[in-house]
Length: 570
Image 1 (cartoon, rainbow, N blue to C red):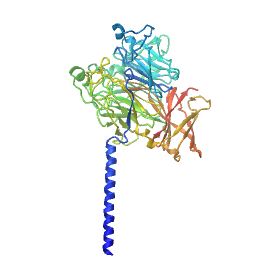
Image 2 (cartoon, rainbow, N blue to C red):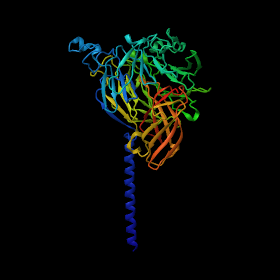
Image 3 (tube, rainbow, N blue to C red):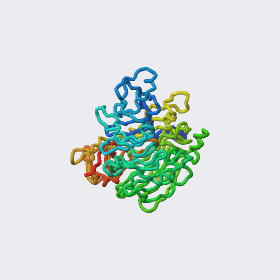
Image 4 (cartoon, one colour):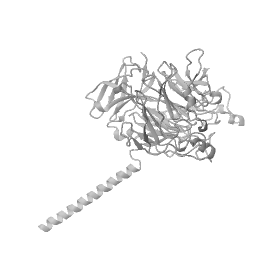
């Protein structure tokens, strides 16, 4: 009997050891998946040929994306049958070299995954700026050569017939590498800086004798030996109605109405520049109703070390970029940069606010600076930055792409939560062979991990917005209803309502980008799984300039599909 018990015990021990071994192998396999990118997002190839390089991109409220390139590069990969003036584009050498026989802008339809050419660009948009008005019209300012003082508009439509229109009015100064920002006043835009331009002006002009105004800050931050290093200045609208302006390493808070500097902030630490051609990137972190939207915090990451421009352009030597990021609260009375490091050096990156408030840093290079053939070592791995995590735990390295997105690439957030990634052309013309970094026309989407089906049980579905007028418009401080389907038990503490102003993106700047966490005044779940909420709109145009926003319901960090809403003056 004792022998039988011993045999059974021995068999049980073998079985336990086998199961332990099996579970260990399973855990190792799971860890292996994690190392190979599990949980780090995925990439989708959308189109092999978008026709034009995405130097600039902007999302419209018709769920299309307008893509622009410069015209000076000559032929794009989208040849037209007719010029803007109606004459036919034939097969003669003259026609084949004529830039007006090629599209330099296209509109991408997200749902159909198709593009259509936009043929009405008349002047060169190379390194220009843009903002989106309250009715969704894209105002595009400046450029190079014949486009340096031009203003263009694109009013989106749903019939496939809208196109660019050049306005009769012109800018007062040449605006090449300038920045634009939508102001709280009715569809007023401020345009700041440019190559060898140290002024700002307004579009439309404030009066018939509209002119530009000198900005001494731009003179002080100009680095002649560094290619400028204050071009494409970073602009953010503070919730107090003033404009944060950052150039090179310095920043101010500017009262544009009085044309007066309100604050001069401390210089950001670490030797190097953050502005073009050093080209770091920036966002203002999501504004929150819990503090009345009064706390405004700026995040700036990456850039180039001192001397990077001369080393690249004169010697072909590419210096390692900056790893550092700086955060600073620009409201209140205490201002200090809090520094931290990214997982690696980075410049020419795009920085986007995701629907759950996390920050995506994508595209760019690890060495050199911006400009033709001035960079090397593409940054293939996006970084995810979680602002609310403790210092040292905020960054995650995501799944790498196989496509280099260098100079003249861009990225933009889509309503379904994916990130559209396009462009890259460090060459003066469209070059597909015999260059280190060929012209890139493939259109990709990066899919963050929170969009994975494994989170669908937490995801808010079928989001619908209701207003008292029955229209999409909501006045400042007003209320609107949000209905959505939730499969799990409702925990109102885990549900948030975020609104996002889509930017005009170019050269690592997401102009006018901002996110607000809105106040939910009431929320209840019905028996059929539907949740009804009453949400309060932003209090003023200082907090959220009038226009179209993407509203996202977020449950436990998992966002639903975003829906359009429009905030307006009452």
